[in-house]
Image: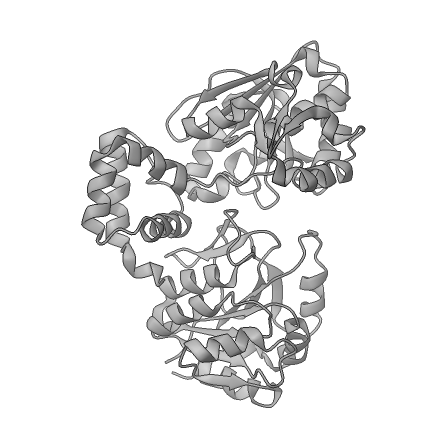
Length: 275
Length: 188
């Protein structure tokens, strides 16, 4: 595969423009290197003979469009990924949120929901789940459906269990799900506090005020202007003294909002809104 | 042709070679270096510090949207692919592993070839899988300079050998000609 020739830079712009004009999906402010790589990969694995046919399918076949959106957005996620992040979340953030009568959390770009379930487990272990609501949103309805089901593949559970233990988990990880064949289903008590909805960070507005927003490894796919827009959206959606948690390689530091936020919790990318 | 970026990829056994070669990298080299190594994702900065101790160049981990500057050695962070944008900045990507690897050498080589075209050099070091070979083909096709560590001296010969089998590689590197290769990269 010499991917870079399959979809040219010009072809990429044509496709992104089609998605916006025909369907209202705005990927035009996405960082190009990653999305070009993903579109090229899809072109190759779906075996299109020409760019023209690829474009025709995207423009005319609704079922293929679903696949296209699902494949070009990155949906890689894990439960309890970055043990130190979850330890800090438990120790320094939940201890503060626990003093509130009611806790509202937003997982922005939640994908298939692994982080939402991780959070629900943390809240349960800290005795806070009963007074919490977890809003989980993504641009992609397919991944939300999967997240809502609470069903995950058994193959990852060994890794997740190790992550959970490293993250300071207090119980036996397998006590949170029931297994059947190659799949597991997480407890309904966790799911009962989750609300799933489609939300597009590019075009949709703030819909509530939260005390904690998590958006990890989503902003790396956006260009700088779009990153600023989304930071503004998060600012509009956070209470004063609320927390914003980003991915290990993402930062608020270069945003104009940086001065009103304080990095919180040592080296983790957790920022607190001070005013 | 002068190269603006040297992309180096390595897996098992490549760290030794880097430690011994980095002292040959001089400040006036006039190109940026990006190093993609397969490694455990423990998130500490030991590797960056280790390599920094071997050269007078600035050595730092890649930050997302960072401008790529000559005279700086950038290290791919654990667990992210490193890609390059048309405006010569880095972007990070947390998508699926490629060749069981994240960071993947292929991802960086291909992305760099797309942006730098002929003004790119790539070097593939010791390793026991074939990550980097496809990327090297893309570099070659774009007119970039290609090099591999001599399989005879590499701790793990598989990776450079596969590259030699599949690409008409320009340079075979052992410790004694690292400097010559770098000079070829910086010549107009």
